[in-house]
Length: 453
Image (tube, rainbow, N blue to C red):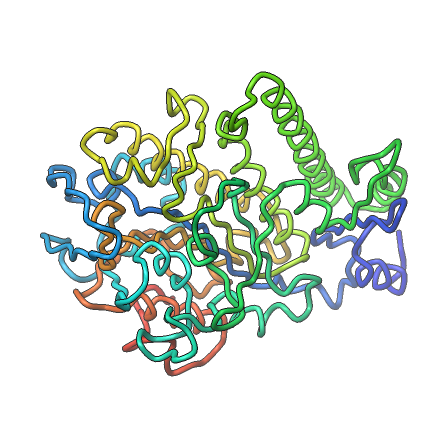
């Protein structure tokens, strides 16, 4: 059994070293912490962004019979006016798109009725993504045509990211090479007006950055590089921590194996698809691996704040979803032809919510100090910047807030907000849950106190 001084030294180090400076950060292991100074789990924040809105029929309770909308032009923002649930807190209702979340019903809050204001003069899709987390109220930023200032992830990262190697982590599942749109369609994270926080898009690139891996002739994955040190460490752990470390180590190993599988698929497709080979790579595993990398970074204390864009807004890139679409298609083009592609769109929305649910389950299985889990100690929000992709509406946005926020959030309810309530009210409430007492955020009119415990 290690003495306190030894335990404290390893706890502060919190990594295993490998060849070439590679590092495998460790999760919280009580065996390595001084008993009298047990770690308090960090409260974290993350976002799971969906482009081009969702099909309202499938997502929103009470709208299953709503007529499918007709597409509007890219700068024509339509406003949805319909019968919403009564204002207040209600039991959760699981629509077909939300159905995967039933297994996590005690850990989520469905929030409906929140609005954003579209600033005329730029594209509706571009503002949907780039301004989703902006701290800037519409028409107040004179240095940019977009109402963009430092986004919520960086506002939070300034406060809770200083103790981690990466104050924020920006990930995107857009590795397309046919860029025909500006950066505003493809980024949700900004340092300030005109200063984008570039996102990582290749799983191997994310992995190398997180674990400082380098190319070796014999070794490519960090679990190979640190294997001997990992075996030595495991001998020093108690039974519970040994099990926890084993699960963590295997989860990293699983990510490595799946990245190798993706690389092999890329090489195989490139051989028989000489034109646009990327269109034929299944996105399912790509999205899952990027999500797992985000969870791993949060678990290991590499970052406390992360964003994951599932895809960009409006791009016409066609993508293949294995077992969902019968051929590569453009999500944006489909969203403007809901009557023709309604079945495929609903399947795609269901998959995206399932991918989010999968990450919630993963977080809930990761034990942290004090008998809590990672899901207890995070605010993880699924959302879109458009209430409907076909009409570009900016009101009544689809939002699901998951996690306990360190005990500061209520869970297991559907909150219907009063018409005209700004999305910024939700962001202000999340700041309060993280202990950041601010009176305003962007165009907030108050805090969404109904989600606070």
